[in-house]
Length: 62
Image (cartoon, rainbow, N blue to C red; front, top):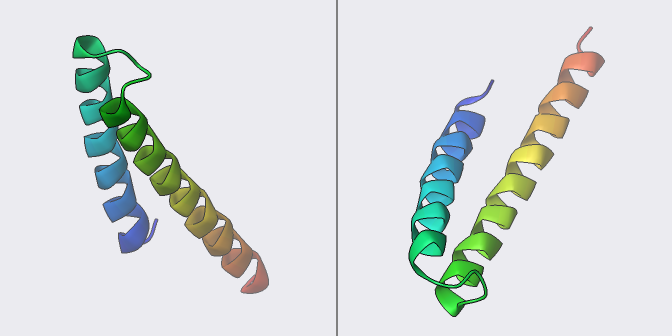
């Protein structure tokens, strides 16, 4: 796992906790919850892309 992936995982966990905390206090359709959810989706997409790229590089180097 690359340093970037570890950083993304940490950021994902922070965003996930924030979303969970907000959604327990506010409706899930509130602007704040939706914004954090959208941000979390972007982080997850970045993580998935970096994971795919790392796997691809590892296969090429074998």
